[in-house]
Image (cartoon, rainbow, N blue to C red; front, side):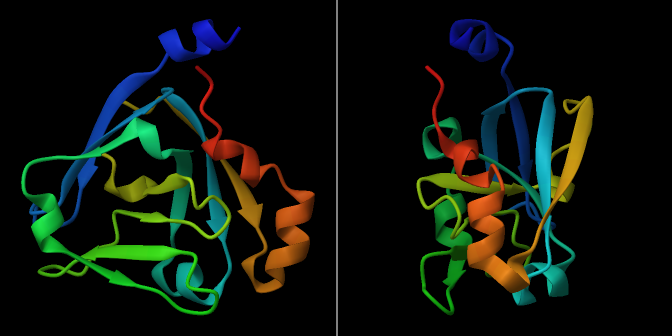
Length: 141
């Protein structure tokens, strides 16, 4: 079954507003995305899907344009473009072994379906224990 799921994955591309941060991510065309209400995500109206870090690749010289912001436990690494300020991806606290890809930053045309689930980041520990979010960064191959 895992081989079938991996065979259905395609490369999606995306990045920030100004185009200096570009990346590609290997994921299904149908994804489960998370709308979080923590202070950071709610202020950015962030909706993201999570993949194993091995399925994510920065392109070109994108690393040169990234700045990282952390707070609280400092587990999450909020990467944003130091020119336009857009957080097109980050390392989430829920999945420090994964990458959270900002849904709105994926180039149009490759995602065919998005199921949006709620993550109660205001009550992080309880929500983490009662959701399936931790499974999102498990590599299936």
